Length: 115
Image (cartoon, rainbow, N blue to C red; front, side):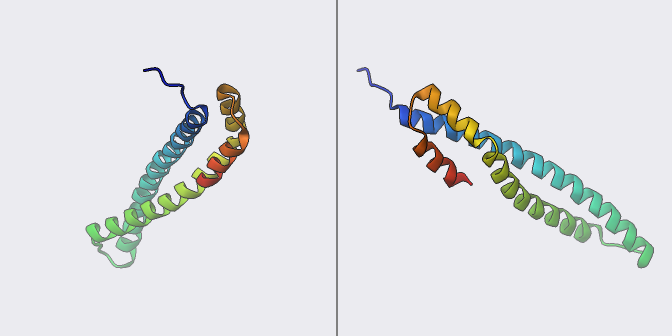
């Protein structure tokens, strides 16, 4: 049997895909940068420990530095993701609104949930 598609649901699904794609890119980049910064911090900390104490504990130092870098990148990804979604949201709303011919208010409410 043929069903008429619900335009509002399709519009929200399309908008959700855009938000999800943007946040996924931000998270991927953030984790990559976090890993690079964690490795760089480990190398710097290792050098500092060797200069000051003459020895270091590589497993502990690497674990701490990479864990701190990943935690910081997680918080940064959340914050940057909100900024990245907020910037193009009026254009996304307009594109989805004209494509599916729906009212913009539910779309704004939906994007407000992601911010």
